[in-house]
Image 1: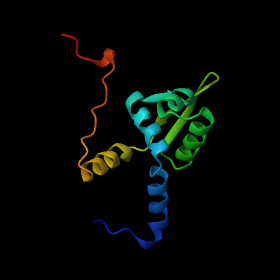
Image 2: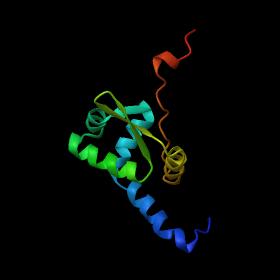
Image 3: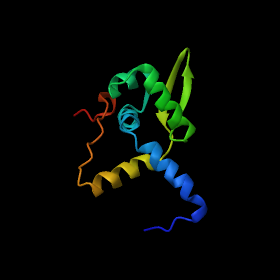
Image 4: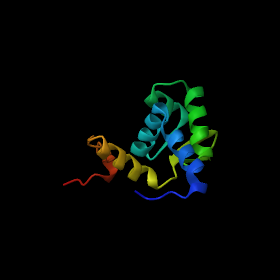
Length: 112
């Protein structure tokens, strides 16, 4: 195990707490699959209200895990923390869970 410097333990604990919420994990799962998404689409995918999804996205944004951009009047979110995919793979492996392969959009699929 990597020895975490004593000064960083609080930051590490905050990152684990941020990712330790099932609703935030459902939101991140959807963002990983979609690439980018709106609050309303993420709320529907996570089976929560738009207000609840917005609150979770705000926390994920403050934690540096997601970013947002405006597209007219709509706010679009995306994962900005590159280590999220690795973390999910490691945690799934430790639980003997086979991660699902991300869907390939039809436009990216190899058409023979």
